[in-house]
Each structure stands twice: as C-alpha cells, then as structure tokens.
Length: 174
Image 1 (cartoon, rainbow, N blue to C red):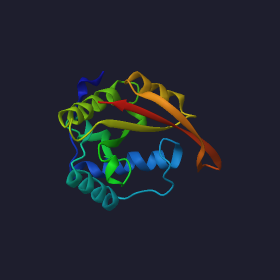
Image 2: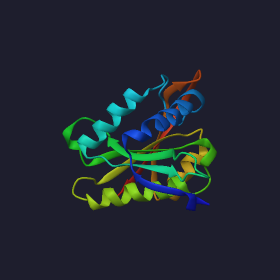
Image 3: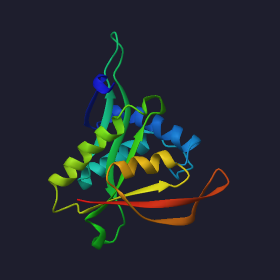
C-alpha cells in the first residue's frame, strides 16, 4: 500500500513533478478552475510565497524502485483564503495526488501532516476551507470523510470545458 511512500515539506526538486500533476488536472478535470498551464518558474514563485508566508506544503514522494529516481506524486498545502487582514486565521487547503496513485490513502496521510502543522500553529490558523467542484462527488466525499462540513453550494460560479460549475464550500474548524 503506501509503505513505498514518504512525506516531507516541499523543496525545489519537487517542482517539476508538481507542475506536471497540476497541468494534468488543468487540462483534464474540474479539480482546479485554472485554465492555463503552469511551468517550473510559476511553481517556484508559488512555493516561495507559501514558505515566506508561513503556509505548510507537504509532498508525497514515491520511494525509488530498483535504483530508479524518486518521484513526487502529490502534495497538500495551505494558502491565503482572502487578502483582507480579518481573514488571516482562515486558510484554503489544496490537495492533489497523481491520478496513478489515488485510492491508496495518500491524500488522507498528507492532509494529516498539514492539519498537524496547522494545529501546532493554533493561534495563527482557526478555519480551513476546501473549495470543491460539486460534480466531483468522490472529491466531495473525501473532504467529508476528513471531517470537513459542507457549508453551502455556490451555483454556476466557474466555467470550464464549456460548462457552468457549482462549488461546495467545505470548512474545518481547528
């Protein structure tokens, strides 16, 4: 199962794999509402901003098999929810796992690390928000199993692949 994987904070060496994972989701899914692909420079700026702002980002690393290279197959991070200062204790959580590695409990495990980090910074983080395209019921059920509560559904707030999409607002109070 997931014994062949390790978890650690993200570093620059992960960025090419992270860009590949995100670009696949941009091109094929509604897990992200981005429409333009990213490159390593974009991911480098993203990670630097997270680190500078004190937001955790943990990656899932596949252990090398028979002398092969390590491969980063997913990540989970917290990030700014809204720019107004009153929202500083509220953070948005993002989680992506490469399509070939889903269903192995890796998302739950990497989320546990991010939640532990958030709880350790309890004065800083109070509320976690996950935004979920409601057409993806597996994704919605994942957040519900992790203890997030569906607060409501925003109708037709995103348009991707020529479809209007509803977004569920999920919350976890720390």
